[in-house]
Image 1 (cartoon, one colour):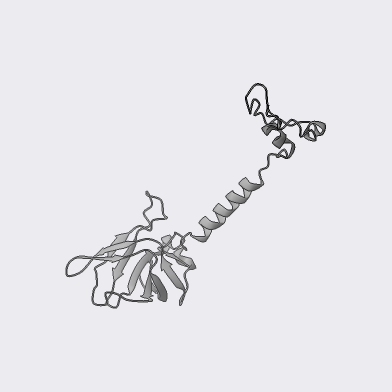
Image 2 (cartoon, rainbow, N blue to C red; image 1 turned 60 degrees about the vertical axis):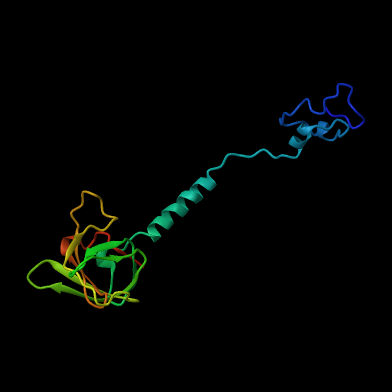
Length: 178
């Protein structure tokens, strides 16, 4: 133990335990060592509150960042792309549409005679207005790997996206978030 007037043993610290001490021992400052600090520490009760708060925050954030179902998208909705889309260009090369690109849903048209709905998205800004592609089948990333909910995606001149969705897949996640 450390004594302010010196210690005959030459050791400044012999005890480093942090066990709780009675209040009467805490008031005796003539004998100072690190165990005195335990007098000022309050015992903590185990709680699940931080765990529940963290889980709740995670759930809300995941549901906030989840892609909208195709059926929940409406005309004039401002949405952004939740996954990168790569399409083969008609002439040569590839068309890469990065995650986060902003679009406005221009129109939703059910096609007569077949169970398909045609979505046309207009970009907020267009970097490659002259490019276009043929239709490519793409599975939205938030669908399971075994899902067959692929949609037809066509890149039109002026950077517009035409997406063809079977009516049975309208409740599945899309490529877009609000």
